[in-house]
Image 1 (cartoon, chains in turn cyan, purple):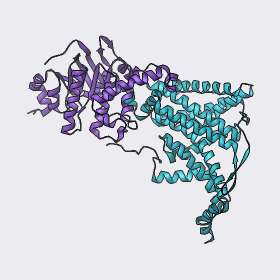
Image 2 (cartoon, chains in turn yellow, brown; image 1 turned 90 degrees about the horizontal axis):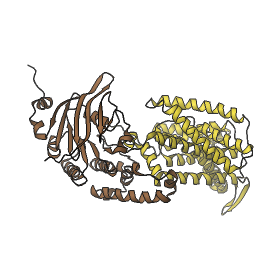
Image 3 (cartoon, each protein chain N blue to C red; image 1 turned 90 degrees about the vertical axis):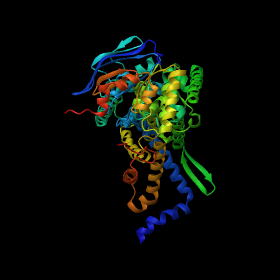
Image 4 (cartoon, rainbow over the protein chains, first blue to last red; image 1 turned 120 degrees about the vertical axis):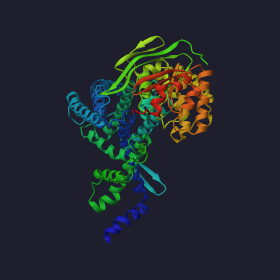
Length: 316
Length: 260
């Protein structure tokens, strides 16, 4: 009886009694959710355009952040370092296309997936060789202060860095959405994602498009890497954050950009809410590590294509 | 009714194998400028394979294809598109998540010259081009009478209209040779009549040369200037619809022949 009360009644009582805490938890959850979305976005871009599940996307995040921070530590101006890193990620996209994707074109998806695992290990080692394995802080002038906001029902505490990350991520997502919907290149990208054969027949060269997609995914990885780096420092554990993108993708659907964004927000907010209202009182905390995966599993049972994914219908 | 001019596309001794399966064997024919050319034959005769060779999806092991006087053995699909070959597909290959307008706009992809940055920022050439292409696309949309579904995602359209959008996308590229793979398959009588009308007016008004695959013999006989018949990957006959209709080999292939 006591347990049932703690599961079904007490959390909601708490939410109503202390709305300020609820808002704090939600903001914290949504801001980290937005960063999950950024990582997931990289996966979706590549999966949509080439049908490849890029296991290396997490390493991309780390590798981009490593280059950015490494250049800055050498005394390069942040903006210049940012531009150079974009260049590096574009070069990486070219290399992946020429050295990995083209030789393997028309192979089974599982082969390409294995190839991306190879890319992941290579980049992890290469990154460490280049920049060493230390945790590096990101100092790009992201304001890091605790803000107290006075709301109608009480005072809440917000981290300015979280807000900043949220704004940047939202901006990036908007720019990408505009790019995809209103430019010819974006149209070509969506066309390729939709139907390879038809895209070829209207004269879209697939290879160039793949390079663009991988470069854009690299750019998104850089943005995600800087955000995560600012929060946690650039360290090799960053690449495991990519794993958090998996439940996000399962929730949102592997082929949907809005899905990646909303999936990220749901996972972020969901795990913080669960941790604070159910995890700590009932399970002694540390639920954030697995909550998202359980939700993803439940989703796999009932809606395997995700919230926004294309329903899988095969004409026989 | 022969309006045909010079040879636009010449297919010579094409053989195509998939492993041990011979899809096409020594097939030759010419398509003349301005004509409607039909490729017919029973199921599995190699008709679609033939179209796929022409637009570069398949690369035949033997034989040559000459388009506009230029001979080639291997060509990639986007190169074929760049040279003026557009096509539609048997199983509709539209971009289902995109609107009719966006789908037709992709047909103009090859004609865009502005740089990536200009396009992305919608400045200079990027802006001018987009406007010019949009005008052309609106013409095609008017031509095929699909104004009312311009903003509808094509995945939601009924089958017959999807086929029409696919034709629009092919026409937006202003092709010299238009390949239609079963443009009327699965349509009801009304939709078929519409499609026939559009195929004819494309040919008459725009002067586009058309090669089409079709199963409905009535349609083939009405539309085409000349017909080639394939069976088991070989050419059975070639000629005007009337000539082909009277050909004994063709009758045998379609109706079967008793071996006793």
